[in-house]
Structure formats: structure tokens, C-alpha cells
Image (tube, rainbow, N blue to C red; front, side):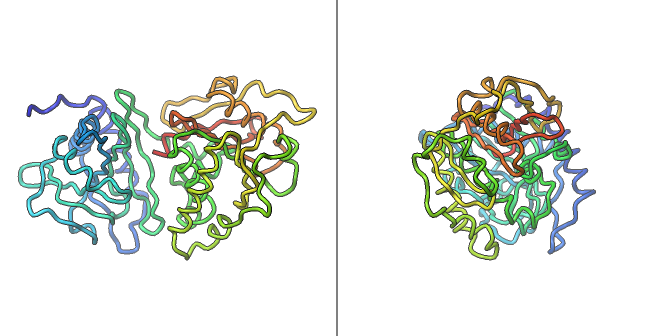
Length: 376
């Protein structure tokens, strides 16, 4: 079968990605085993992204392929399933093997062979700064890397959707009033911070986005001030507060699978019309909550919107332009609760967009952080 034409976005993004990985290798320490993944050159990056893109547009028995390609040699990982005969890095072959590797955490290993790039097998363990290309959806490709073997975290570097290229701006965490959630997703926090509380919000955001129904989650500090912005009674109030997530968030040495299951259960509550109310200690107070304007407070008219991508600029918009009722009510809630430190609203749209609303003391207004590029 004739090879598809080169994917233009792969050619555009490859030198930028290579420059990013080069900088990171100069700055980051290797993991505890002294390992660091091989640095792919520009041509290799382009070839892997190109193959992943064309594979994403194919189907295998009607199913959309979901694959993760990691550039490393078998000897760079301790957990491998080796093919007797390495496979050519071709879209058709990637589509064929996709059903076997679609579960999370499984990567197809890619390295150079005598006659070009070859898929040598699968692995579940990859070293720090390993170049990874993931097929998220048809025509949607995410370039990422493993930041720490111990934390198990991936950092997104670039998102390609059709001819649109978004390079994640790693400096976005330096902006005033940057939420801890955004800093964690950009990889600017320590592994210890990732394992602890911020990890819970990150996992909640990912799980909220995954169920595809859209939803809202309000994070509230101690006290009852938040109730002045909620229609009483809450349709599905929880008493006593559901504390399993709070307990598991503190028990970092326990089986992480229990935390993941509980995160998914809490995130599932956001599929119900209304908002989930969660304390800043991760106790669920209720769901299906209807947000109302706090007595004596002004209607929110504008919010500042940013997205952590290179070339992105802060813009002032009416909150109803961000996606409808969920976004408008979330912005109103944060504005009404501006005096309460730790208050935030997380909103997932049905189309995959994800926004974190927080009050910005520097701007003296609600700041909407668009972070879906970091959650893929």
C-alpha cells in the first residue's frame, strides 16, 4: 500500500520538540537508577509523530486505535515483551497491533534498526525524559515525557490536532496566581507534591473529562460561606461527608489503585446536573448543587482567560462565551467567594474542554485557566 504523504504538523513541531528535550536533559537529574532515555533527533521525532497521526485516522474492525509510542531501546527498560521480528513503523501495522496495547500504561517500544525505525515490542516501564507519542483520538496526537519513575507522572509537551499545533508553555507556572493544579500538570512541582494532594485534583480533572458528559466541581475551604452561593437544599447532600478520598489522599504509601477507583467514583458524581461540592481536604459534601449569585454581590461580567501554550495571550471575555451555564455559574461562584482562599471551580465540557476558575488577587477578577491541552 502506498505510504501517505508526510504530515505537515509533524515537520513543524519536530525541531521545537527536539529543542525542548535537549533543554530538559541539561536541567533535569537522572532517576535513582542513573537512567535517562535516549534523545531522538529531529528526523526521528517527525517520523514517529507522522506514523502515529496516520494510524489515528485508520480503523481496526471499526475501532479507533489508541496507542502510545515510546522511543527507547529494549535495554533501556526493565519490563519488556519482545517481538521475535521487530515491526516496521508503519500506520497500517500500528493499527493492527493497537488492540493489544490500548490499556493505560502499555507503550510500544520504538528504536532504530539496521533499516530504519522499528517497533521492537511493548513495555510498561520507561525512564525519565522518555519521548512518548500518544494517539488520543482521530487526528489528535499528544507528545509527552515521563518526568519521574517514582511519581509516575507524564508531562505534556505538545498537542497536535489536524493542522493545529499547540506547544505547551512550561513557563506558564510562573504567572501570578498560578493554580497549584496547573503547576503540577506543567511538571514544575516536586515529585513529593505530585504524589500528595495536588495529584488528587489532577486525577479528578482527568476523570471528569473522561466521562464525556461535562460537569462541575467546586472546591471549598472550611466554613459555610460557600453555602450563600448555593441553592438550598442541595438535591444530593451527603451527611456525614464522604471522606474516603480524603483518607486515601493522605495514605500515599497504600495501593494507588484504591485512590484511582475512589477518584473515578467522585468524578462520576459530576455527570449529574449541578455541581459536586468538595472540601479542600477532599471530603464530598454533596452533588447536584445549583449555584446562585450571592446576596449583595455583583453579576460577573468579565473574566480573564489564559491557556498555557506558546503564543497564547490573556484575553478578557464574558464568561458565557466560555461554554454556557456551567462556566457562567462557576465564574460567578468564584467571584462571590473571592475572600475565601482555596476556593476554585473545575468545569469539564462535553467537547473535552476543561477550565479551572480561581480568583486572581493580582488582576482583581476571576481567572479562567484553560487546561485541556495538559490533560490529554
